[in-house]
Image (cartoon, rainbow, N blue to C red; front, top):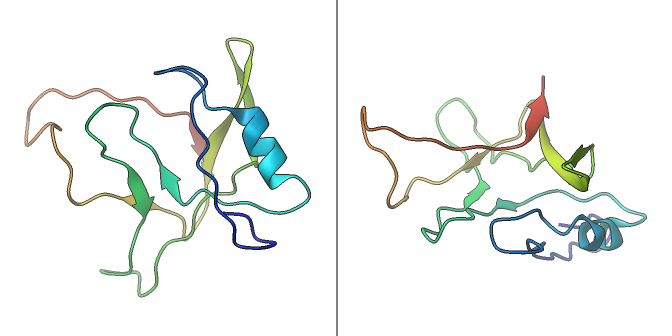
Length: 114
């Protein structure tokens, strides 16, 4: 989400299972602040992560990460990691096809933060 006008844009991957289109993200966020409101699940399950709602110890919804704070290069491609700070978070309470209990599971994410 772009702070200057609250516009949103879905940043797609360049090829299925590949890197996000950082050039499209740079163009959309140029000259203003942007946050990530949804982290897309790249599997066919659609288990996307949206901003966490209020509840438990947090009486307010979480904020999204800064979309351009953590620029990295992975395999020669410019990408952005998710730099988490206090009050930021995502959640999906209605997933499908994920491990339950002690079932084996694997995942990856480019992330950073304190």
